[in-house]
Length: 235
Image (cartoon, rainbow, N blue to C red; front, side):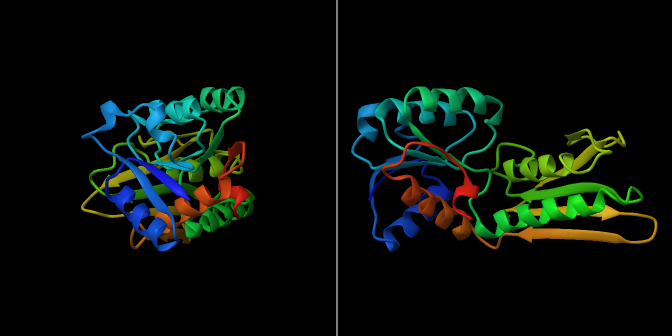
């Protein structure tokens, strides 16, 4: 399979390594040095594009893939306010979109655990809940897309929480503490606490390999397909 990498930073390079190990070919690498020159015709030599750029360039890249009629896997976060417009455009153009806030198998199992725990904890209002996420200093969006997914799962199941925020104070608000330090790949913690005890679940990534492997498997999944896909289609 021929792959175009839209975003060739640390994640892009990790994806390249995994893709080559799985027998694929990288036919295009786009980074800040050549992004302004890339047109839809440049992407057409790929079977699938994998997009890990920035929140500022991701929508342009997605639309360019739709124009080129090339399936696109999107790992960039920080653009989900436009998701309905993007999904509509994908369907109108008979395109292919696979997006996820996190492509790690472990994180997606963590999502399942988080939902189940929130369902249980809703019966016990003596426990308050908050979250913490830690990422490397280069990450542009906060909170992380993964944290937002976790938060929305909690909001769907904990009746006393009405919205999430990175600002602490309102008891009806799920507080997300966002930390940027060093080169941390990603740590997410959900904490339930009462006057008696605490319950915590955590996912801690040791490196970027899990994200990269999931993205390549997603690309393999959508080759020659049409429509909109997420990690639930793989797990």
